[in-house]
Amino acid sequence: MSVLAHSTRTLGVGDVAVDSGVAPSAVRFYENHGVIKAVRTSGNQRRFDDSAACRIQVAKLAQRVGLSVREIADLFADLSDDPTPEEWGRVAEQLVTEAEERVRHLKAQLAAVASGAKLCEIGRDDPAG
Image (cartoon, rainbow, N blue to C red; front, side, top):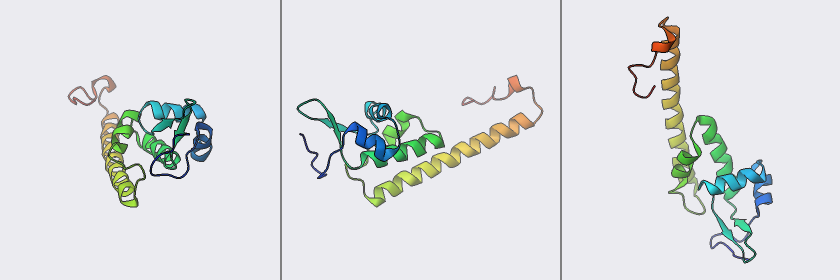
């Protein structure tokens, strides 16, 4: 079995699924999209380090904030293999900033909807809308 350098324990897809509260197919989905990384054993089985379940749980939170899986993978790209509390703190700051921006945008959209304007004309002048 291939062992990851920073961890004394590796986990299979099923273990990560249980630890993170998602289906095994979701573990494979997050791996395919670069949110988590696996190494392959000589028998071609995926093996994950201890941080995989945590990364998935944070990814689920980020998805609730509204980030796409691609955005989450980009957010995690600079994390070390065994993220420190400081690294997770930076991720948290980025999630808060992103969530606040999305809330501001949603409030503006709600105000526009409540303005009495024709709905089909709302956002015409907004390139992001």
